[in-house]
Length: 289
Image (cartoon, rainbow, N blue to C red):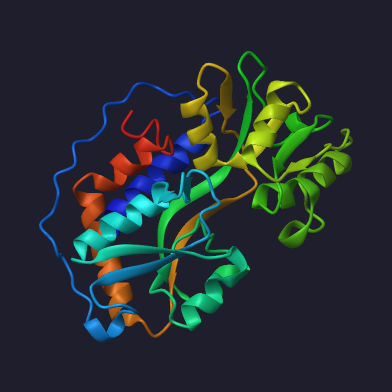
């Protein structure tokens, strides 16, 4: 747990820098730990010998599809945890709204799908946090960097529909009465025009053709986008609306599974596997700098 907190602290300090960059950082060499580092009783698993994981596979870069194959940092983390438990990973593609019921109905052992600990989705379940997330502005290269306070006022800022960032821009959901656009108005600035996009490809196209001035996305997606499009995009990590954690969910009574998963997570953190996964997807591009 201490190593995880140290990594989260490093990422938080990076998130508070005024202009993010993507320095060249050597990838840590992972030294695989002999498996298993913990075991789960056969009766505590949905399918003996397998770790059944529910994921919606629609959160780039954490959980997504590569062709028909589950991919992303969450999936790689889940696979590494399964290996540390001596289990085979099975990913069950699940609509985001059905993840809770699939856990309750024992269709999967745990869920990992970019689920924020503060979300309604996480309520009522046991949780193992594994990644800290904040909000980041992504812009075209050459643009004057914007922070997430008054710099956004009077601009057209895109986001992905249904995300925490869309809610924070528009002042909806848990941000009712305290959205970024409302804050602009209250401070005497012009409000924010905040179109939303169903797909990241649509959002990127709007940014590229100038239909929006910037995108507000989570730090994992921002890192991935700047990794993939570093010649065209920059990201700015200034003052943020939220700092949250993403968490794996299990049934409250699954105490042995939760303990085993936490032990396996600590194992992949200690030997560098966890950091290597984050670097692979650009989520911690500056880790170790």
